Length: 164
Image (cartoon, rainbow, N blue to C red; front, top):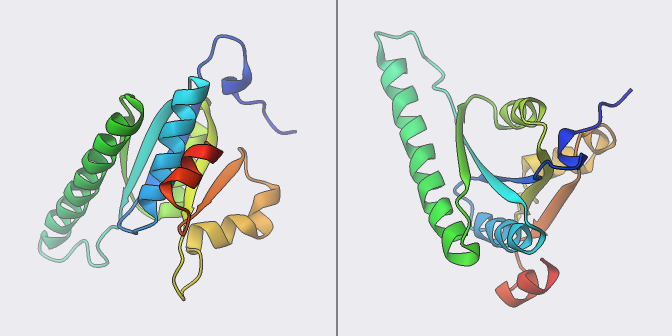
């Protein structure tokens, strides 16, 4: 049996979750999430995932590399938070995790029952829409605990505003 999320209960403010990364398309997903949150009265959560170093136990270098990766994720979140404030006047909740992006995303959704929508950017390059979008569009979509909004990276700002 699928557990009903708390975000759908009366009195709970839903949250939209946006994954922040270095891709050009990320700004499109942030724009959609910020505009939509402002229109429906939802809160926004920004997730930045730092990739852990492969050789963590080598003379303490792993801890330094991990700290640097987390610092970079924090900087990306600060920049994304500025965009959200400018677009919607909302103060986002920022979450930094270290690990596999897909795993950390699912863990956060499981932990925060107020998250009711995941907003992802679809890449426009040859590599495809991105690994998260590809995974969720496949078999994982049938079992994913919340709806997913996929924002195509080629949309213009005006189109995103109209859709949000």
